Structure formats: structure tokens, C-alpha cells
Amino acid sequence: MSKKMKSGFLKRKASQRKAEREKKGRQLVTFSKKEEHFVDRHRSSLIQRISSVAAILDQLLDHKVVSQEQYDTILAKATRQDQVRELYSGPLRSSGTRGKDIFLSVLEELEPFLIEDLRGQEEHFVDRHRSSLIQRISSVAAILDQLLDQKVVSQEQYDTILAKATRQDQVRELYSGALRSSGTRGKDIFLSVLEETDHLLIEDLRGQGSERLVRADLHHFIIHTPASWQPRRIYHNSSPKM
Image (cartoon, rainbow, N blue to C red):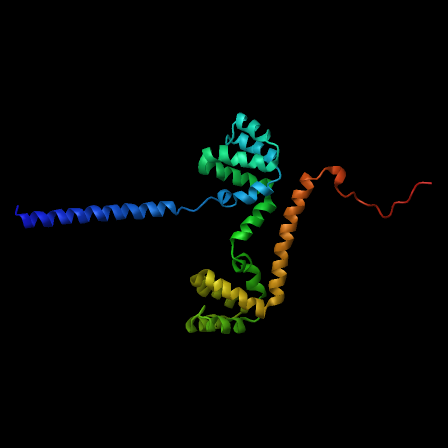
């Protein structure tokens, strides 16, 4: 093999090795972007807000996510927050995805308002209230005018949406087309337009979210407040015995 041919051969091999390294690097990046588990994503909130630690541990013990020794160690901690921290740093770390899945299912049963509130925080407002917005938006044409101006919908999408027979179908078409393709930016603009054109509707939907949070906090209060501190029922119709 001539020196020139050998040099070309070595360059091709080096190029192939470089391509293989880059391919492996892309694979590693893909794996590293795997979605974080719900209970990891909301670790800080769960540590602060979980109320029924003992009941949760009972079920995790039954499902073999925690051992009896871990159960005792966790409950020996002085505060609920430290108990949940110990649960995270021990059993949930070692049991992996299976343990976290079981933990989440137990939370859905024992702390439903808390989980509902955390899930609500993850979704965009216009996705969270999609059903209500479809039914209750009144000024579709005015909204579309502004979305067209801000390039959230194209002229073709604008015409397609307004060709639908009912307001509800028009808003459904807006969701399935323009809002899906425009992502968070489009949804943010849509919400800002709604705050201008349908502000009473948006205020009402935001009020519903506040009520959900109040229910979660009330549930937490009832569980952790001694019975002697909780308000007692007042019987207005009772009269003192003579």
C-alpha cells in the first residue's frame, strides 16, 4: 500500500471513530434528558406539605418499598418534614422508579388534594381549564383577531376556525391546531388575550384554583390540629335547661 493510500485509509478510520463517538454522545444526551419522576420534581413541596406520614409508611411497608427497620427509623425523626426527608434519602432512593410509582399511588389515595394541586401547577392554565374555556368563551372572533395579529394563528387557520358551526367547535379547533403547534408562547398570548376579552371568566377559573388550594390546606389543618383546638359545632336552637 502506497504512503498516500495508507494516509487516506487512516483518515477514513479516524473519521469513522469520530462519528461513532459523536453518536454515543448524542445517545448519552438523550438518556440524560429522561423525564424526572413526579415525586422528585415536587420533592420540596411534598416534604413540606405531606400530612399523613404514618399512614403512607404503613402502605409502603405492605408493598415492600420500606423495610421494618426503615419504617422505625423514619418515624423516630422529630418532625414530619424530617420523616419525609428520610423516606426520600433512604427507601425511595434505593427502590427506584417502582418505589416512587407506589409512593405516588399511595399519595393519590391519602393526599388527593395535595397531588391535585401539584399537578395543576404543572399544566398551563389554558390546558388545565380547557373544558371550561371550550364551553364558556364568548368572543371567539375578537380573540382570533388578536391571535392573528400576534401570529399565533395563520390566516388559513383563522378561516378554518371561523368556518366551524358553533363557538365550542371553533375553540376546539383552536386548541387542536394553532395552540398545539405554537406551544407555551401561543398559550401565554392566548391567556393574555382572554384576560382582556373574557376577564370575568378568567377570574372565575382562577377562583376555582384558589378553592382547591384552600381545600388542601384545610385537610392539612384538620389532620394536624388537636381536637381541643378545632372549632366546635354551635347549636343555635338549643336553650339552657331550667
